[in-house]
Picture: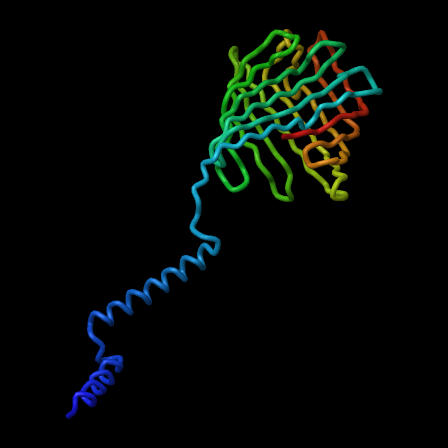
Length: 257
């Protein structure tokens, strides 16, 4: 057999699948497995492998900064704000809210909380609260949850404990209704309850106060929105201070950065 015919025969034999050298067969199998694994990874994560994002973010919001007008005697101004700093999983929260009555700060509440997600929609929060206003102060330990309930209701529920057997609970509920891309209607309600009366702070035992509001804001930008609304307040004072209840008109701004 000539050298040319011998070379052609060898090439024909090597081309047959069952007669490939072991090394070449192993290389093809490895390449095929690599392509299969890559395809599976792309199918599981089409935008690339997951990224462990530990960047630190900051956010601050004045949800309510409003003056109150008309109706029965009551608060002249409300404020409610919050800020947090941290990663997607670990955050430090600061909350503040209160009212101004006849030039005196009432219902002042300042909270510093550690926040950690416990599900896709809810976070566990624990920390400290201090009632800082024109009345004698009081410190509390705090633990609660905050998140989004079905149908996009923002919910928070917190339990507080102080010295002398004082316990308290607060529940808030709100919902945003987009009438247009810029007009947003927000109904909300807040309930506060205490196990013991605190005459120094003019707090009654049981359901101490209720605040319900209906606010319509216009977002000049996503970060800044004036609003108008109606606010109902019922404050159950001690036997010495009595109770106050009534509707007021509200004008304010909502801003975040």
